[in-house]
Image (cartoon, rainbow, N blue to C red; front, side, top):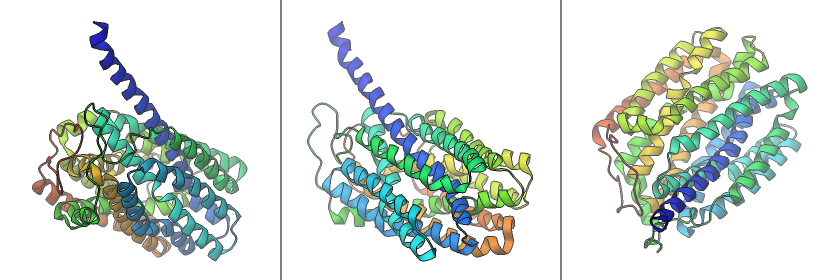
Length: 424
């Protein structure tokens, strides 16, 4: 009997080991994001930059994603070694943040942010690509792996908030560099075979898939369903630009302490963690497309109410909607990419997703948020509600047209996750 059960036991042990390695990678990645997203604008204000200059500097890496993320991700698919590209990106990110730390004046800071764009914009899409491969091949629950990143974001946003309240905003970038050093360690924990594009870990399926061609990437770009997906997700996610660029500064202007601001960021992510913890059941019952529509509606509600500058406790309640405005939208997007895109071009799809969602749309919105916030302050959230409403309409069209299958290309390699309810 041991002979019959030992292969299954070994497979389970391998899956658990892979889940923990990916969880650690997400943990250190979101330590970076938890330092960067809420507090880099605060650090820039501490350095003496205006709202318009901060908007330009924060938007620079976002625009860098437009070219860098899909190009590097396509090369990772083309050459097949995603782990190597991720390791190089992590080391380059540490160097870029070091350049940011020693920069002085707007133009030095701008060129340092260009280096950040070149180095760091592929960290997230490549990590997501490797995680999706784990979902496909080892039947991992994406939400339960990804939630460790959200917990890490909570720890970082709370911890850095307290640190800068006690010791000043000057420590933000050194803390960011320390988190990036841990990211480097995390990249070396990723198994080499998991990060090789087009290979299956199942017995008898170890041969490489056909080599990716440029025409495959072009076909993906021209897919109407994929483009509709990009429009829907980019507008729902892009509506967060005002919060990401000026949320901490606006809460500070409202009189909230550094600890309170860190708590507000953490409340949103705690709600997100709870959603990720039950993501398998949510996707199974609701489906990717329907979940994206629901996320869009609640995003509109969130920004509409935020436009009234509510005090701390109503703001804290509204922060729980981050579980839907970001968490559910992201969960829907990842499961769409898992089920709708062939594995051999999954990094390319992630790169395009990052380029449009976190690059073109988020970058443009962030750039516009400088004068928007200067003119309207917190009332600018009403504009974000309008952007989210447009994305919700696109999501409704996607839900009607997509029924859970591939949107382009051939059958995927390796076992596929269940897609019950994917068409929504």
